[in-house]
Length: 93
Image (cartoon, rainbow, N blue to C red):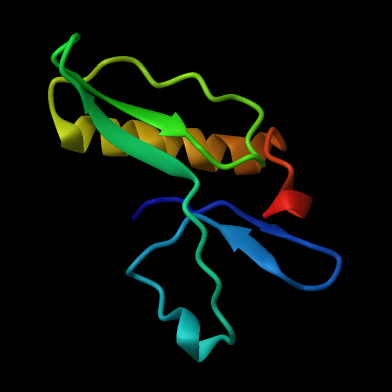
């Protein structure tokens, strides 16, 4: 089972990486915002995940990956790490 990182704001709002494995509608209102983009770079012939949401302090892409699924795994690690270590401003989410 994967570890999920969640940040809880003072107002009770929970900020976390979306997962189809959780039925959020059972919990309450749901707002989803795109935080990253996984795209193919034809010059490098590789996939990258890049943070596109202003709450993230880094917009540097992840390392090049041959498979899209690998870039998506990088994306998940990047977002969970940012939530865990506080390098994302949850006030902007």
